[in-house]
Amino acid sequence: MGAALSCIIWMGLSLYFAIISFQAKSPFYSYINTTAIYIFGTINLVFFGIALGTLLPIYFKSYHGIKRATLFIFVALAFLLLDMLINTILFIVDRDNYVNWCIRSASLNLKVILQQVDGSSDPQAPSATGFSTEMGDFYNCSRTWEDELKFSIMMTIVMIMVYSYWAISLHSYSHKLRIDLRVMMTQNMNNTRLPMMMPAQGGPIVTGADIMLQ
Image (tube, rainbow, N blue to C red; front, side, top):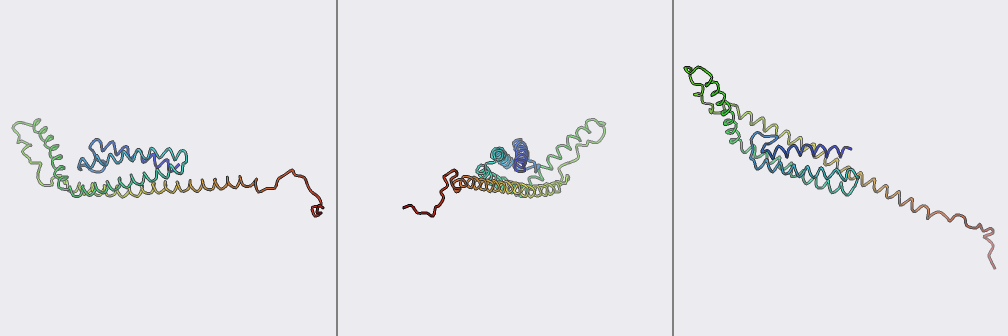
């Protein structure tokens, strides 16, 4: 039950990450390279397919099927966690572009608001749009970048711990099935050998077996 539940949760998270990524949005970053987002989404889509396929051997309790599925899960998990680590490094390296993007986005929204206020105010009043919104780190974008970096690192660590624990648990479940299969095969072999070791029943009883025939 626990193995199936882990696969279902994997499927839900992976499908969610894939859908968000293919919309050119990141679940962890406000701004990051679009190619990195698509790669993250593709890996999650593959992981979704592997988790879905793992449900079949779990349902049939197939040791060999779960063993192969566990191998695929470990490989996909390694690619996923490595991609998350690379994305974190890219986010750190691309700090200046993030700050510039943050300032441009925030200043554009503020300019729209100031223009609306200026249009509805007294024409004789000073123009509010004369205020320059693109000045240094007026919107505290550096602090926002630090918060997103901390959040992404925390989520990467959590996913490494949780995903690795689920994968190891699934691997342990495959070993448990192998032990159960070996015990069942041993019992079947013992049950088939027992009638061969018992003496034949219903034969004639010979008395005076110590008398030698002349």
